[in-house]
Image 1: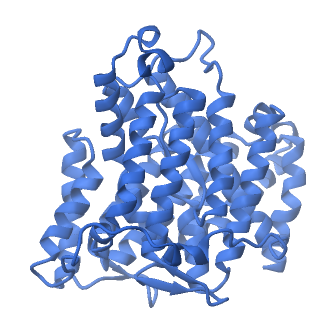
Image 2: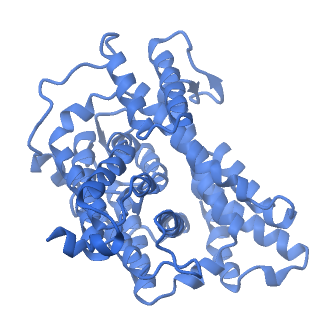
Image 3: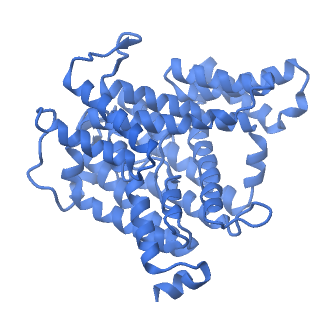
Length: 439
């Protein structure tokens, strides 16, 4: 039945190959279950937002596993493609940090995600994808990812204690055990990645966690399994506010959430599909609207269930390299995520010195696209440069993206290259300017 439904013979694959491919993909992206709770609550087991809503690591973990599982299974059954989805690395850290600092409430954060998801759904349904792709210059798209990557690395260095940003830029205490373990974790992940070991990030997290136990940094849970409690997750379900986010900063954040998801999905889907030999002679993916729609619906669903932007993971490539060619690969990943809902106590014992190195390495992966920036043309690279330095040194992705786009438009205008800028970009400049004036 599975062979017929997923068209194994047509895709030249088998149940065994798809099963192994699905497990491979899950192993390479399971780190999200460790990283996402930290992105939302920081070092706190339970964080209370400005409205007093209790955001616990356990609740975030359970909901992330649930939504990731359900949406990935939807991808399997609706699109029949080997793509897996979960909470993307980027807007989760930006918005999570703003909730932790009191700049946003949890409900406002979910409102921003929900609106960005609705925009994505509408653009997908009405086929306006190509307009958006043409509107944003290539270098700016690349810089957005890099800007977020530097920000994630910044958080990883801070959480691990390798750097101390509490009073400017300073080195952490390199004689403390957590910092030593964090450095070991980063070097271990790098070494495993150099040898192309699948699941290098997850292996690094597990290794540091095990080493942290005898040093008293963390402790083994009383039980490794537990039935998820509705009382734990209920404060975060259907908790969204779309009435108080229509400010200059709110529009920037919606922009960040939407474009981050849109371009991440576009690049990932085409990149993974190319690896799988699914592109046509023009380099297009037949039926691309299906994974786009699943991704967009996933973001909306995630916002209703306390999750930040749901996006297609580039780690899906690992499953494709293992032979995955159909939705069966995604089905295996989805089921694995749902099973992990019952292992929350085991995941929650993982300390910051284990997650910090993972964040630093994820940051590295996100900035690797900088090699594709065209530095030979100053008017093309200046905006990307401004975006990255503003986002990094102001510790604000929103400020970085706003400054980068404005800098790009400015340098094009003063060099009389007006036509290089899409007309819609001039309209976009208005709320970006308001962000700095009002914010």
